[in-house]
Image 1 (tube, rainbow, N blue to C red):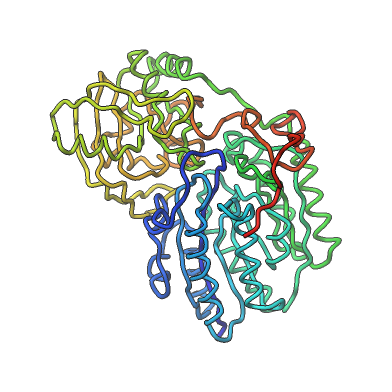
Image 2: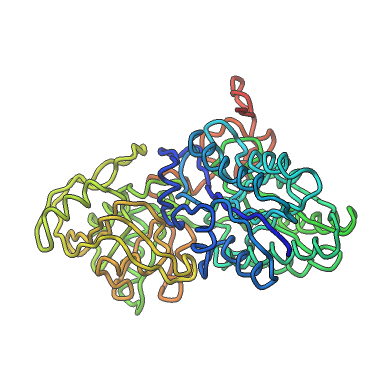
Length: 510
């Protein structure tokens, strides 16, 4: 029987964010399933939208025997701590080393992990795995669409295969695609040639959405380029908030010959570069966005939905800034709701006060973001929750969620979801679990950039993007870059990056 060692370790790192990812964060998971080890991995990775779950399903259909190591993820944040990285990677690598005879290894990684001691977290993981399994055993990896792919990642893996949707509704499908490619490798005993290209400009995440052009069309044409000669081809727009040399978009192709791989990669690169002008759009200030939403709501039959894009916990924000809440209250918005504000202290106070009580809180604003501060006001406690529910929408895909003690608070006619754990508001259930029916609101303000669209676009009259203070600037050129590769444009058609005279070394080693 074919034996495959499997594991997953996912983190998207915003090196400008206020809070690091600890081991405890991976144990809990945030919006990801809680950490599992050994046989428990195969129990957790079932019928959910995660790459490893899709691979497990396909592997079982192929009759493969899987040797599970570890599966975990944590909400995007600043660097993964050295302690967390070393403890998790040790479980993964030791599990592979002690698995006995193997035919291949599959890993579900993000591709944009930066740790306290390694710029290229995934490159280091793959280096250690390759060191254990030797040069010949196939090693196939699924990656997030936001991967900042590095030369080391390409070198150590036989294939990297990235998601093609943002919102990421195809994470499990990408795991299945990895299994399909691995089956081809095992059947034909082929080592496919690799082509890797890094693009010359950063792409802001708000304009990476695959529901819209140009990205939608790029992925359609990318799929058409796959063939027997080029069985897998990927475009990763990248996560433009990691200050290291290899941050940015990339294309990677695997072909029967080097010429096949090179030709496919070059066609996709030309396509993307030809659309540089199109990676742009309108972003509102908080007050302008709220006032525009209120005007639209007068004649709308469905909610106007605003992305609070700069405090997106899916991009490293702490999900606690108050700029959009202040704008809703200041402009006297009605039938409005926003979430999720991460504030365990305020959630505890609401639970202590009880439903129906009024409570004065210094809500949110605790992450130290410039231009933000706690919002001190008196709120009505409308509903309380233990924070446990299922998120059935297309992004979370039926995951069990644990937001910890939570509350729906009201100020005027604005309702606020407050939680004790962080997760991106990308599912309608993240309002309903505290008694707010999203379809009955005139305005919804979601702490998300794009993922919310998978579940909210069907109920939305109009989508707007607002930029209140937060850890993930909508304009990538506004970040204080110091360590990108020289010459990359820091936004589409933007200025080329020039390293500061005293920038520290562009590599970190352990």
